Image 1 (cartoon, rainbow, N blue to C red):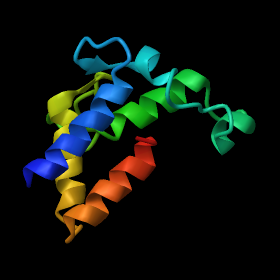
Image 2: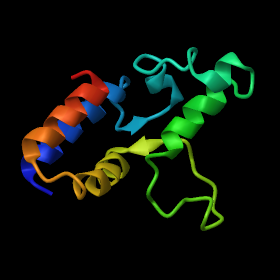
Image 3: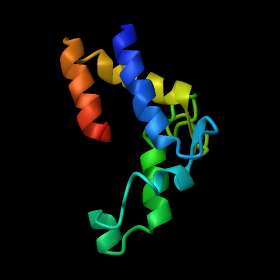
Image 4: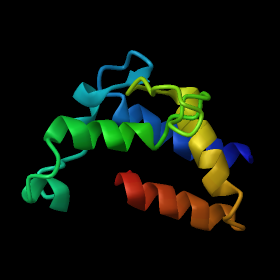
Amino acid sequence: MPECRVRVIEEAYRKLDKSGDGVVTIEDLKGVYDVKNHPKYLNGDCTEEELYLKFLNNFETNGITEEVGVQKDGKITKEEFIDYYRGVSASVDLDAYFDLMIRNAWKL
């Protein structure tokens, strides 16, 4: 993956990692991601914590998946975040579009 893409992904990760400890947790997310307007929260299907965990689990790539039968830990390392976006990057041809996409998604 080109360095310009890695830089913007790292910028997004720094925004998420509010505590600056190198691991994104539910507490970090609460400052940048609000689930209170999520349809499953509004209709009572999920609690805030469940929705935060689901969000975090999207980024976990360290072999901890339901398909493999191992439980996810609900934390995102920078490596997991970059690895997630490595997969996204593969489907985006232009660096400028990828940069714009990440900046818009994370309000950078």
